[in-house]
Amino acid sequence: MDDGVSSFVQIRGSVPLFWEQPGLQVGSHHLRLHRGLEASAPAFDRHMVLLKEQYGQQVVVNLLGSRGGEEVLNRAFKKLLWASCHASDTPMINFDFHQFAKGGKLEKLENLLRPQLQLHWEDLDVFARGENVSPRFQKGTVRMNCLDCLDRTNTVQGFIALEVLHLQLKSLGLSSKPIVDRFVESFRAMWSLNGHSLSKVFTGSRALEGKAKVGKLKDGARSVSRTIQSNFFDGVKQEAIRLLLVGDVCGEEVADKGRMLLDNTALLVTPRILKAMTERQSEFTNLKRVRIAMGTCRMASERRM
Image (cartoon, rainbow, N blue to C red; front, side):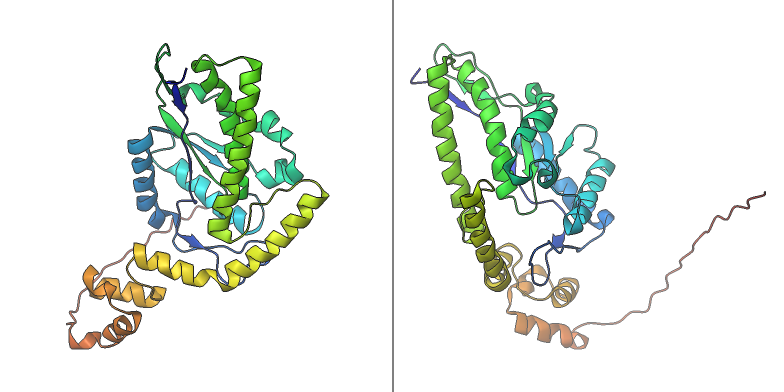
């Protein structure tokens, strides 16, 4: 079976809305939505269409909580998906990880999450190919999110990967217990290293473990490190990302004015120049008076006792 190949692709991504975490983030998460649901709908639709074009059928697994700022984002995400044209063919599985699997109680994943996922295995399938192997093709992916797509997502994606691993090995004709156990052991070690590597890239610390007393002490130290990193050092990273993706690092007000007044190439200038150009807009813009008619209608009903 040296030529046998099998794979299963999963996707992780932030909630596809316009939102941010302003101010100091200590303890609970403070979130702010930049745009309403109607204004976010076109970008959300493009995102889902792109996923379906590239990966096929989508199953959304939402791990956001139901308290504080996460609850606001969670509710907005569900409303936007259910109100979109993708609601009919894009199932959403909502699993509050902090509520059901708090303290590393991963048996809840088996009891509560596994039955919901099993409903969609046939729609997704796995890829398998090789000599004396019946060809199989993956037809869709699981799109998963928590808030930062790190610890919770790492845990649940690892759980799903282990569930699918048995199916992959069976499709390759490797179903004996010693072989399966060896693959599972190797995968756990590999996935742990993967989670730590991703966490270091985004937070500067290893992934949270959430188990045993020693693990909780380590998690506490890592949480403090993450708080310092996110509140005092992430600003420069965010500006670099924005410069690469958007082309400017201006404040929202200046950037919005610049987009209305200038073409996209002008947005590549420094924020100082762009601000000066928006302040001197009267020198290169003309005003034109327009008339706008607006009407409202209020339907009042009379209740009789």
